Length: 61
Image (cartoon, rainbow, N blue to C red; front, top):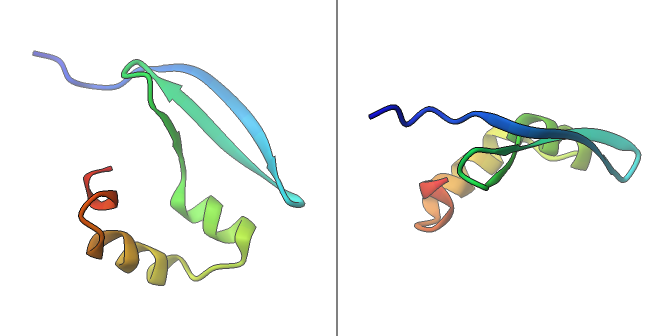
């Protein structure tokens, strides 16, 4: 079984004064880069990744 995702739609989204690229994939989900989100929000990427890894729900994504 091939479980690779295919990008169905890609859109640049304005987040405050930065642009973040979001993609909708063949599974119906929307994905954004954590790095780009952190950059746009002025957050430390490493700290956010650690928070995500400690959260039972977020770590699944």
